[in-house]
Length: 333
Image 1 (cartoon, rainbow, N blue to C red):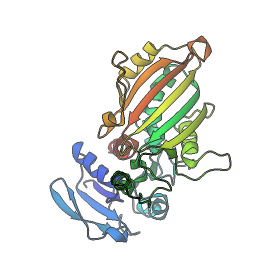
Image 2 (image 1 turned 30 degrees about the horizontal axis):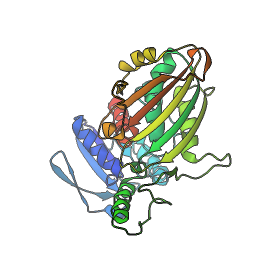
Image 3 (image 1 turned 90 degrees about the vertical axis):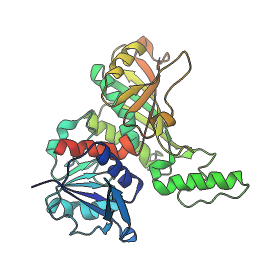
Image 4 (image 1 turned 90 degrees about the horizontal axis):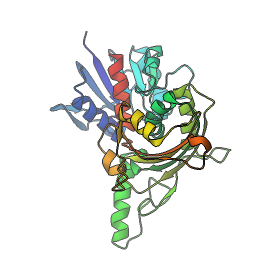
């Protein structure tokens, strides 16, 4: 029997990226089902030179499906994920629905691929900001345990989906034409502006995005004792998140040692050209698989050379979402 795939949420930004990546990586399959909400039923989707008709996702959509890639939002994952598992599929879920469930592996293949085989039918894809931050931190942590991590994010509109990217474009045109910006997706103007991440505030004053990064890193690293604090910010960039990461290590470490470790780390590329003041930008990361790292320097405020600052950029839709899920699916084969 061949491999049968289902894509849940195929018409969204991540769903479309799933298709691009499956084609690029020549993922083997016999059949593929294009699933979305009732709004998208009947739409045509192009994949590998063939046209597919989008079907409505129902509890019966997963018969004979082996792997289901979900990017349809947390409530849809909770509603339909169990039906897919019951039908015999392994679900790789891109939402927040199952990430902190102790029964569900939370996986970044460059970090904890061994967890994939522990799945009970569902594997969770981490939050995009978490993935982009910790793919480069992991090889450093393995060499010299991280004691504390301070992260500030500069998050693109793409994190809120296709409609948010279109809103940024529309607002930019409106403002440049002297018109009032239209706001539907974000609570504030995103064009020519910066604001605190638009996720819900928790009682401690941190927003959900910030706490996701803390909790998910603890789970993926299997290291709850790392002290982590985050500030997550939206910026007017279409695609690819950037993050400033400050790390305090157990033992002394130099920028050269960090460069050496990262130069061979899977999923990482260096852009660290001090001479020309050239470091990672969202434009470098857009459409790319790797997380780009630069501005590697000693944190001189931490004694004994135990502090390092790095700056990273990664494509939120690719490695931060679709690519990570497809890499998990490849390991399921």
